[in-house]
Amino acid sequence: MNPLANRPLRIGALSPDTLPLRYFEEFSNHRLAVGGIVHEWSFGETQIAEPDIVILLAHGRDNSVALQTLRQRFPDAFLAAWLWDNHLAPDNNVRTVENSDAFFISHAFQEALRYFGSLLPRCIGHVPSCCGQWSCATISSEFENSIGQTRSDALHAAYVDYPWSQRSPFLRRLALEVRNCDARLMDPAHRERYFGLSKTDQVREWCFYKTSVVIPVSADLSTRLFDALACGQLPIVSDVVMDLDRVISPDIQRSLPILKFRAGDFQSLRTMHAEAIRRFDEGGARAARGRHRYAMENHTLENRVASIVTTITSLSGLRAVAVT
Image 1 (cartoon, helix red, strand yellow):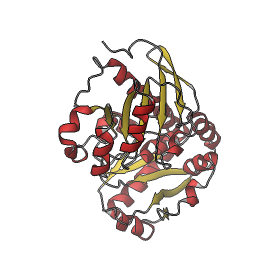
Image 2 (cartoon, one colour):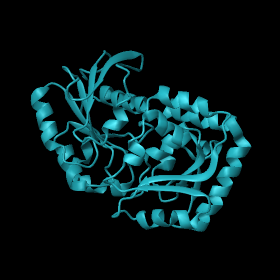
Image 3 (cartoon, one colour):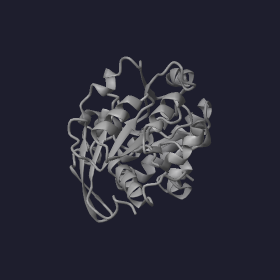
């Protein structure tokens, strides 16, 4: 028997790391409907009261102490970790998983799973990244405002430049190698250029461009793909991104469309940039609306949390099963 099945639940989420707060700060709907059942939802340690399920967002830090504290505070709650960065920081992720009842991964390719070893049976699902920086209302409002306005042909490439990342040399050459590229790189310690903007202004920036480039830190399918689609952009994705076909079928990729370029190849990116502009102009507002609608219906934070709740409530006796 699963004591959490077929009844309204109190669901809390939190992140001991301040960075992920931006993904939830506009997720303000305190009711979450999943499978015809309406659950109560809260975010933030001070907001959680007597939860049935606690979802901890883990961004590569050791969350063992936070989880132990949660265990003492809520001994009857089911503690699930959602690993947004399981492709990085293996030691910290292992310590987080050791203190969770179960965990979800954002990246399902083998290199991002190999290090879990005997802990892998605690993984109960693949819950990929999503469009979670802004509320659906903010995205929809600003997207509608962008219809009829002229968008830039420049390639949108706003990134945090992590010096240790394999993508860093490529990012630093983008502005020189790709004509009409708006490359805006931020130092990891100084992200105010973008994160200092209001949520509305952030969305407006994304809606100003026709297309953007998706370059992973380490083969990961990142939030920026879903942000681009939600804002009506036509994304150009590096072909080293591993989980794209798992999350979005090739047929849907072709219909949106989502284009791919050869990793590290500026000529390939230049060719795909020109093709993306042509396809955007050809599809116009109707195709942009299709991309926006697809993201809003399938890849929002609400979609992902609903998936987590569905998985937990469908477990037999809450026993974890290995991801397939």
